[in-house]
Length: 168
Image (cartoon, rainbow, N blue to C red):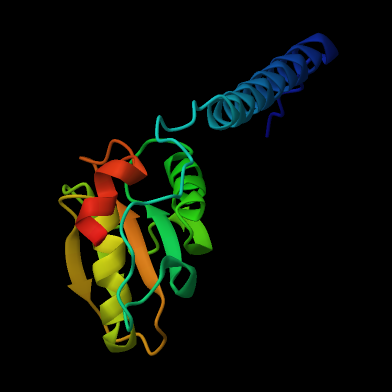
């Protein structure tokens, strides 16, 4: 039986190489995390203005934006899109619930997908008028909340003057 004994310098060289690789991987991960955080915080706000006045008078019995809870989800690869859109939706008078990436992880090619249950059908029509070209998707949720899922064709929430005629 013969045993091979490494010299101390060879063992030290391997340890140094292993340590250098480990440090390089950690530095690369930290760089990636900082890059992601910087791209999130440096995302410019949407060009929509924050004016909530409209020229139409709501008719009795219609649902008002302040009575609608909207969950804003991002189904695109654009960082910070749900957050900036949620701010614009809140500025229009809606109650904003959850703001996150799409929990269903669907590919939405339309500007937006409006998901709602039977209790939120009237509210969904108001939310659909907010984003022209949005698609209605009815699900089985029990509450009246409405999900606004931003798709690849989404650019921005139109200014209130452009969307006011659609909601009246």
